[in-house]
Length: 306
Image (tube, rainbow, N blue to C red):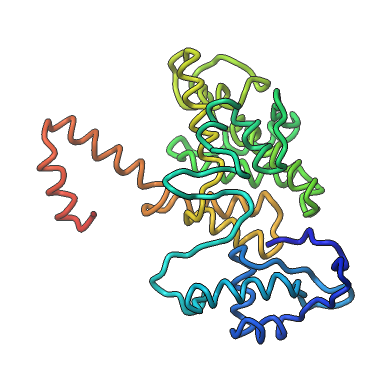
């Protein structure tokens, strides 16, 4: 949902009400809000009113796209691939780019923090580093340390995000600068809140090295850290994964950044999404233990898991 348009259109044209936008698009008002929640249409609250308003040119452009695509819309496109128009990422010809720059080249030449800044602001800032206030990190760590030992990474990250939110009295400021500031603080807070496996490094290292010490007890070499950093850069935009869509929906409801991230972390633990990797890893370990994939696959099929 985009709320950064100027208060008055440059050409002085009156903004459309929800009902007017729905009539122009040929859909129900509920569908207009579906477009907003999925990032296909920007909206802004009218001063002194509870209703939303829409830029007429943007609505007309969406109507043209719908006609060109055969008139599909979020309410009637069952079974079709969900798409969201964005100014950030382009996927085309088996390649993808962030703000017009090839993502592979960008991630290979710049750190994760620099790639994130490029995605957020459109500016490359060499030497960018993310840091978090000690107060935020301390509260998040205490909350995570209170969890039982069997708590998983997603559990710890959700708790850390909620704890960090409580320490931020300005979390309800949804201006662009404030949300970007939250992102720069929340990322290192989440990493720092995870229990370290390798007692090395400190909270001013690059994010990739800080994260490595939470993932592995082996001392990393430079190529290893570079590989992790590149992977993080390539994954800064998750397209329309279920967790990303959950974040979009939360943000469209004007939830603060911590709450939106928490929504995504909740979805990512589903066995058909983020947890799928852990289940696949466990199955591979069983194959190695038994020396054959056949009995493991047979048991998975017998249990109705595919």
